[in-house]
Structures are given as structure tokens and as C-alpha cells.
Image (cartoon, rainbow, N blue to C red; front, side, top):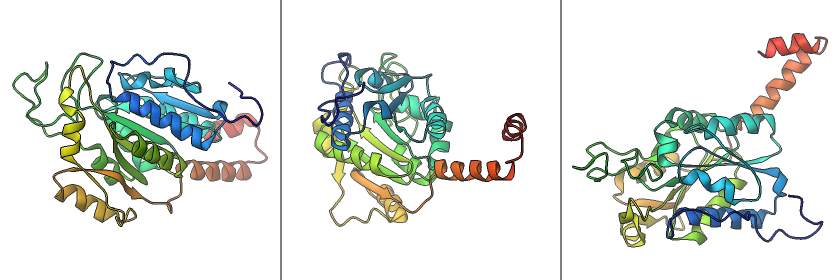
Length: 287
């Protein structure tokens, strides 16, 4: 994966052909991540992309960087362990709404509150696509699927609201039909030091085609240029009062200390306090 010296990396995509359905919104996430990496020019061996299970979680296969296809809903704890063990790596996590907010919901909430220096791209198409079209945690009330033939009667989870209220320090939302904006959101999220989440409103042409561009254009609103992204109560108020999904950076807090920095400080204190301990004694105290 090592590139020739002084030669810019023109693409981070692998030779594996993306196997999503033609027209799937997930292609936009792959394009945005590739373009963001091209801008940052990270060495490929310094990037790791971690995923769970689902259509969205195939994404690491399509990038020529290190990656892991982990268990269903477990991408965030795997990424947490990797980032704490190898803070020198740029760790990006990808997952779908089912992967993140159903079986992985507890991991999602704890990752937000810990403020680890990770970037999480949530591909939200409001459906279980890989398992052939069941209602997902973000599916709207009334959505008819194989598991809810008379329409879903449960209120959906808003991943943006969940991230904001649980402590993520960078929260943004984009749409698959605007790759240019999505790329800028992913780029800003990677450059932010802290827990970054970008919720990408995607479509599923096979099982949830109503999430197309026309529908998203009618049900989303761009944040104005003078929007104050440092105002957390303002972001929550916007979500409560608006009947449309806002696109852009809803919140960014650059003042909070990251968990990985706290962890490094803790290890330093422990090593100083136990400098005369044998390796076995030090390991026992860590455990």
C-alpha cells in the first residue's frame, strides 16, 4: 500500500468493484470518503476503516486501506479498541441505521459520550436492505415493509438527536444526492479532534425507493451561512421545531478533551507511579 515518494495519491479506492445495487446511495459515501482522503493525502497504511454488518458495511472492501468487517453492531467497540491501541491511525467507522441503532444502539450511545477521536459515517436509508427489506430503527411511521405490511406504528430514532444529546462533539447531516457537500462534511469530520458523526441520508433503490432525490429535496433544508454551529441548545431547538431534516454541520465543539488523550495521560500517570514495578506487576494493576 506504500505509495511512491512525493507522488500524490490519486485515489484510495481498491480494485474491488462496489457490489451495491445500481443507483444505491451508498456509492456517494464511498466517493465522499475517497475525495476526503485525496484532499488530506494520508498514507494508506495510516488509515483503517471499520464496519459492522449490512449493505453499508461492505464499504471497507472498496478502499485500498486497512479495514475490518466486524460483527453486526460491533463496529464502534472494535474501532474504539483500535484507536486506543494505535492512536497514530486515522480510524473511520461506517455502518447502517440498523447496524448502528438496533443491535449496536448501546455501543452507539457510549461512543458518542466518550468523545473518542473517531469519525463515524452512518448510512441511513431507513430500511434493512441486506436482509431484504424490513422496517429499521429510523423508518418513518407508516412505512410498509415485509415486517410491517400495514405500516410501521413505532416512532423512528433520529440519529442526529441521539448523537447531540449523548455528547458527540461534531454532528453533521448530508444527503447522498449532494456528494460535494457530503465530501466537505466528511472532510470536516475527519479533521475534527473528537467524536464526529455524519448521518448520510441514503436511498435503497430495491427496498426503499421513496428516499429518492425528489423526496429528500422536499424534506430537507440547508443550514444558513450564519448558522451558529457552536450552539448546542440551538441545534436541539432546530431539530424540535423544524419539520424538515437540516443538512450541514449542526454542532461542533473543539474545546472538549478527547478520550484518547485522557487515556494517554492515565497510562503516563500509572507508569510514573509504578516505575519500579515489574512488567507482570504493572500488567496486573492495569487489569
